[in-house]
Image (tube, rainbow, N blue to C red; front, side, top):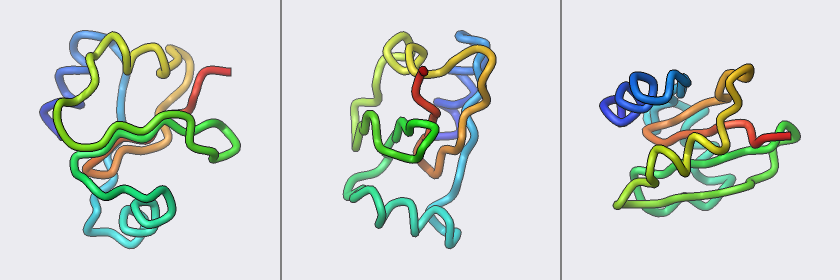
Length: 88
């Protein structure tokens, strides 16, 4: 996932933050949103509701993921997976 995030940042000039599943936060997020396959990418609204979820392979296209990442917003988190605020 770190490689995917680095490639995404290099090509799209948008940053994704990682959260490990080995942390309490990562484990709680996986349970809360029903993540059953890894890697997983979660797109969250500003209120914390799930907007889009990708699980397992293949990963989404960078253009598809880029739609959800606003240039002026920083992603919320990505835990071995990705959490991104949804566009307003």
